Length: 339
Image (cartoon, rainbow, N blue to C red):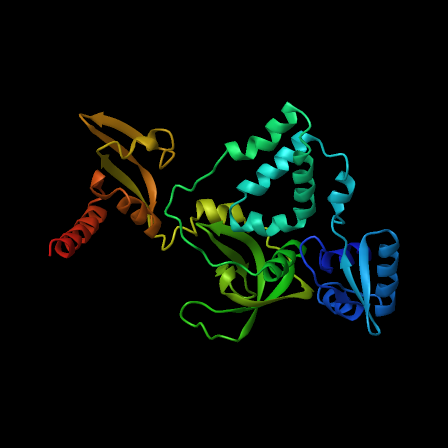
C-alpha cells in the first residue's frame, strides 16, 4: 500500500528552489505515470487541501484551477529537524554541501536544500567565539581534483529523478538514447535499470534488456527522454554493480586482459605508488635514482592514459608488446615535435 501524501509531496515543486506551481490535473497526471491503483483526481484534490491545512503545501487560484507547490522547508527530515539543529550538525551539512562536487551527489542533494538553508542560518548565528569558529570552518578546507579540469555535460534534474526512481522502485524504463554515432536517434527502447555509476565526471546508467545476457552502459547526458513504466521487473540476483565496476573493470575503457606490468620511474614520478599501489601484488625496489615497480594490472585505454601522463619520467620495462606500442607512439611524437 503506497502513501498517497508522500507521493503527492514527491511530485510537487518546492518553493525553496522553484517558483512554479502545478495544477491538480498536472499532479494527477504525474502520479499516474508511476503509481499503480491511483485514486481519483477529486481524492488528490482533497489530500492537497489537507496537506495545506497542515502547512505543508501552499496554493493559488488561477481562474478555475487550483495551483499547488510544496512550502519551503516542508521536505520530510527538514520538518523534523527544524529548530533543533546544533552547530555540529549544521557544520556537517555545510561541509557536505560544499564538497559534494560530483554530479550524482549534487543531483540528489537538491532534496536536502531546505536543510542546507537551515544549516547556513544556524551557522550565521555567531554570538560567541566558538560559534564564529564554526562559521569560518568551511573557508579553511579545500578539495581539488588531481586531474586536468574538464567541463562535463550537465544532466537534466528531472530526467535524473525519473531514472533514479525507476532504479529504486525496480520499474522498467523507456528511454531515447543518442550515442555519438547516432545523435539524431528518436527511437525509444525499454531497459531494466541495474545501477548508476559516476566515472571521471560522467554519469552512466547500467541497464539490461530482456533477452540480452550482458548489461549495457548509457551516458545519462545522452538520454534525451526517460519515462518510468508501471511494469516492474525482477532485479537479477546474479548481478553485482560492485563486481561490474571493480572486478570486471567495465569502466576502464576497452579492457583487454590482465597482465604483469613493470615500470621504471625517474625524477620522483612514481613515489606516490608507495602509498597508493597500482595493484594488490605490487612490489617495488630502488636502483640508484630510479624506482622500479611491478604488479598485475588490467590492460586498458585508461592504463595507457595514466602511463602517458608521466611523459619521459616513466619507462615500460614489460610486457614487451606494451613497451613496443608506446615506443612507436613516442617515435611519432618525436617526428611531430622535431619539425
